[in-house]
Length: 213
Image (cartoon, rainbow, N blue to C red; front, side):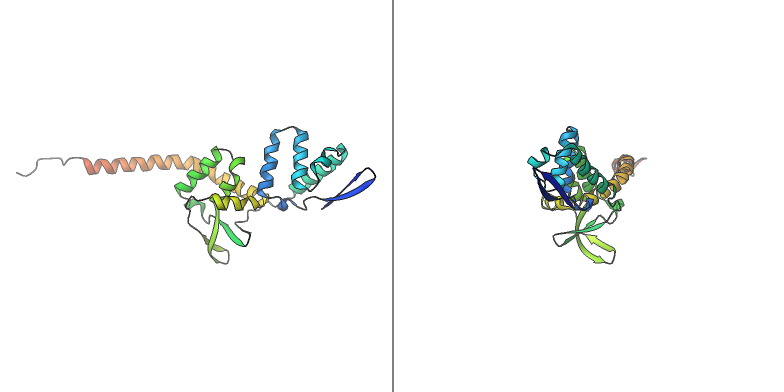
């Protein structure tokens, strides 16, 4: 959408996002980073990231103009689509979310856990690169994705172009699953360790009773 700013008797027109789906993952991370700053810094960075208004001009905006722009941005964010889309496309390549997160491997979960512990904001593209991979085969809504090899660098860079809407809905979806996994995984590992211990004891225990001579 267009934003008109009048300065020194002249009116200039600038572009502001039309919807929250226009916000990329890379832009969203910049906005999150600024949430720890002052309200003035947050407003300045938000307008700079979500419009093409020069920073110098943003600093010279009257408070009422800043309030109007920020109000419009907040309105667009409130209208965002929160429905998780398991398939999306970037630069002609289709990516799909893990079709069955119940079957997620220990390696995938370990990487996700590490990225989350090291800071979601700093590792957002990497987290998405674990959850989403290129679709190798598709039949209607059913699809398969490439095997997980832990090589995330190139895909994570591509995912900076993801829509912030897509990222937020995927994080909410995974967070609910993750809370369950965090409770289930330790108990599962404990049970499996106990099974392995019993199996090992069975294999190594000496035979009871007298042997034949």
